[in-house]
Image (cartoon, rainbow over all chains, first blue to last red; front, side, top):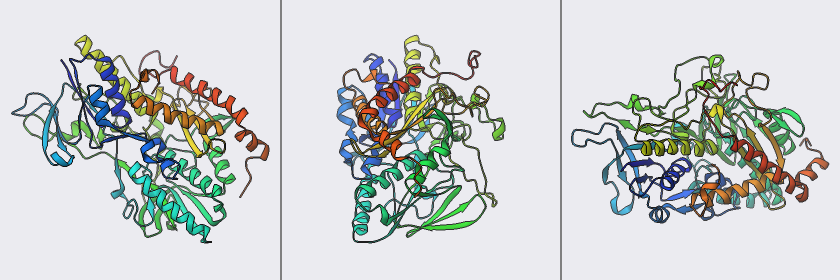
Length: 485
Length: 48
């Protein structure tokens, strides 16, 4: 009998647990540890943030589902890793602390044969002074608990605009090295469309602020893509959309401090500037959770497991942008020091960024961190689960399933406005996610047959389809496994 | 405001009938990318 411990119940952790349970017989134990009681379909949070969906439509409680599916669930947070056990415990374990009312603060050693660290990112709001959800007129759509009050604040602002008030709205990234530009991009387009629908668009000046060097970088170094029978750069496509909707933009901006209605930022020219606003939604920096790790003798071995996020089979040798290779990126997400530990999704430490690193004239690094959200999170979680399943069945470590982000496609279906007939979406696919400038040397590192962009109502319908399909899949309803990650 | 998307193009973008066929096409295109799967970049066959 094998015991697999999954830390985290987000897209990555939940996908891994679901596949492990489906393919392993009941003699094997699958344990999920998560401080969250609910599963949330994060991509739909932007619709909660514009009042078009209620949070109950994008989440469901995990405990009843896991009970039904014979998955053990501990509502707790991981505290420290002991991959060799300790003096009193021979098996490797993770020290967890319960967060529920009745057991709050109680700690437990949860042993494992295989460990999947799918803890995702810490939303590091503290990295930007004054960037606090619902404070200083800044808001967030990173979680449903953030998105609900964000809509309340936007609703009040719309009411004030109807009374004749002119407002400034600022949306984008809230840290010089923030990632997840895609979510902010969706939100700014949805907010713009809502203001049009409610007849107050002329009362708002909407501005995009981002650490990207060019629009459409999205943390993947931009893309050359097929659009309407021609080849277009992603920055040209985004400029077209923003200009068409009268959205201004500030690029190469590292937001360092927020005061009440003021965003202070440094740009790549080394200038210190500020932008005022009545409502802002700024994505924070993502960071690791600061976990510690100890060996059998209680010596600190955090460096063997973590480099901010978890160390996996990537090539972490520091090298300049010009020497980065597709082969630097991990394929099995296995920790090199402990073969039974894996980190899919956002939990793994990337070898470097995907976008070209840039510094301001003052030496401040201002560029997007690499995204690993959504589709890659699900794909990497499934391949890690499949390798563990093979290893258990064969009785020996098997790493047959591989998936480098430099040999993997992703579809980013960005909502650009909600509505059955009036909605819109910007659908972008990239193949591969991490550009391979050697294999696709004439097309900016990507296969143009599989890297394309589309704008229109079909994109909204597709995003709605994904919403319902992935919640169906996450609820593990009949034949859920037929839906790809 | 700079009108970068022409009225006729915008009409096509929001036409439910045209967009229905585009929706089917988009689904198929994405499925094709997904079904191609993913893999290693370190195998000898990768660049072929």
